[in-house]
Length: 315
Image (cartoon, rainbow, N blue to C red; front, top):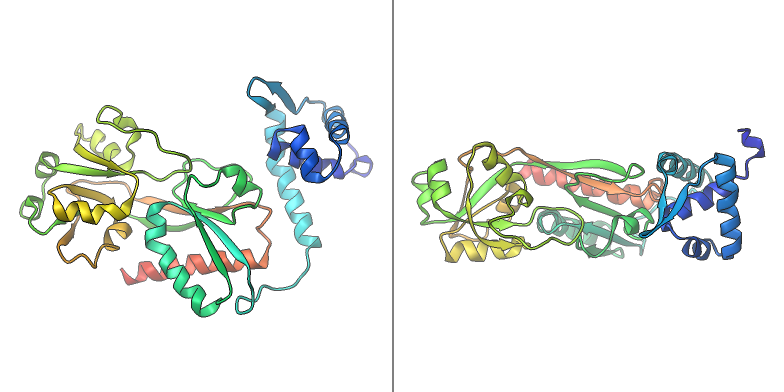
């Protein structure tokens, strides 16, 4: 195909159609008529010799060829946007920008306080909007409605940018009278009752029980490799409740070490190493290519990485 004869506006139409999976919404997003968008899709199908989007019972679904093209075209548009964007640099001292950051409960409890403290000193007019994992979808992130997400991700769209923020080990949190302190063995660990805190991931968690152990995540995966299983008496999605439960019961909470250390103000709680090996987890920051070249976005990404690094050095 000769690029000189290709209408580059069709790339914008393709990108919007892939985001929206709907001709009407794509037309509305680009402020053009639905017939005009339908005509653009027809031209794209002819030029690329592929249907690109196919109507199914679930709505418009992309073909394999469309999925292959999507990250390439999105990246090309991102480069074009960067080349044509104003060169004004972000000034944190005067900016009134709102940063929307989507985080897990674990990340919120271990990083956001440091970020807020930093913003008050270095970017006093900036506003932070902290979203939970169920407040927005990957599509919202991809469209730039959310600046970035920080979490442990198994899979992310190919078009997203990703950067490691930290790696974390695991620790056990128990009350000061717990039997595990005198005899920190796997046998004693398995004899005890436990608190399960939700593994991180975008989406709404499903109900938990003793039977669906395959959904539990890192700690129970490690125990399964040892042909062992712990007795979970409380399933919770919130790290904040953990120190209160541990303080009043003989339950063990096995958590990422950063989360465990955030309970240091509770004098009756003790942190110990698990009596078996659990693979460390990696926390990543992901964001849309639409925001990649923004000077404001680059600043908040650098700030978060530096704050995470400083917190690590203090441990």
